[in-house]
Amino acid sequence: MAQLRKKPLFNPDGDTEVFTRRMIGGNTTNLNDFNNMRYTWASDWYRQAMNNFWIPEEINLSQDIKDYPGLSLQERTAYDKILSFLVFLDSIQTANLPAIGEYITANEVNLCLSIQTFQECVHSQSYSYMLDSICSPDKRNEILYQWKTDTHLLQRNTFIGNLYNEFQEQKDSFTLLKVLTANFILEGIYFYSGFMFFYNLSRNGKMPGSAQEIRYINRDENTHLWLFRNIIRELQKEEPDLFSPDRVNILREMILEGVHQEILWGQYVIGDDIPGLTKDMIRSYIRYLGNQRWMSLGYEPLFPEHIAEPASMSWVSQYADANLVKTDFFEARSTAYAKSTALIDDL
Ligand SMILES: [Fe+2]
Ligand SMILES: [Fe+2]
Image 1 (tube, rainbow, N blue to C red):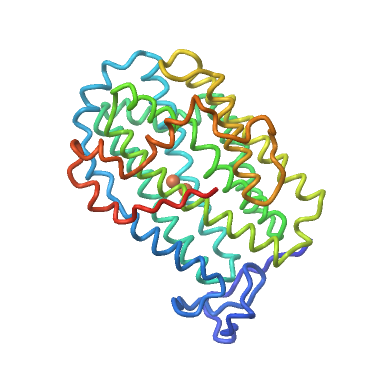
Image 2: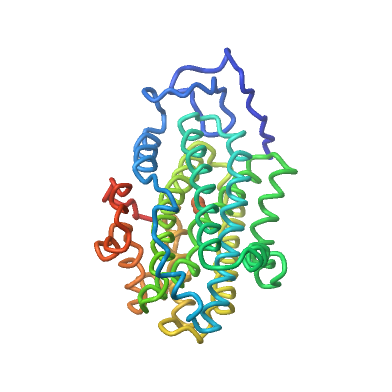
């Protein structure tokens, strides 16, 4: 398997011609050139990500502070565990993205990865803001580390965490492709039980500010998914040997494992005890998402019986709309950041 060489940071002998640029294994100068891009979609991505800028504290959580003590025990437990999980995901993303960027030799793509890294920091901070608002400092600290103490949570994080660690040890192109796929699973499958839980609470008239935080995060995650889908699709063209049938099968198994882990987790943390959600809804929705993600990479569905969005979950996309007029009355300035109304959600 082709070993990857870490790109030099100062490289006056790097290629300046756009046509010689490559996603991996190229010879880059690292110049931020916004005018000459080989991967022109990076320009659209960059502008969309900049338009999506938001600040967690601009969202008013006063209703959530009142609602939190009145949540049922199941709702509160799920709220805490899901936040613990999400804060872990965004933290490991923040740490891992620069590790990927060291081997990406298209600087327009590195620009995008840098902005994504910044957004993952904002996401982690938004969870801290939510916890600081609704809990005591002791409870907040306990929740922040449940991802280590809850065996279910640790198990699913271990799957992704090991793949991320593997690339720390082994620098070859297929290990990089696996880490890109792990990222794609995290961005496109792992977040979604959590997101649907918060939208469901909001649908039931609870924790509206938390749902609004999640909407902005969800909007960013859509662009992250778009970025990684594009990186993988460019590699399919540039490095066809990486996508031999046996290797594609390994990637397929990874997505299947990600779907499996997400369903197990969703059923454990949400189960049948939260009004508005059932284990069945979770299973069919996550399988539908797994299909969407895998098919967006150009492959056949994993679960042919779950190609269409389950009718029972159609409310999720309505609640995920960051420009929901309904939210404006409690969050006076939301539209100030929502400059971009065209969400990229073609995955
Ligand atoms: Fe994130
Ligand atoms: Fe992300």
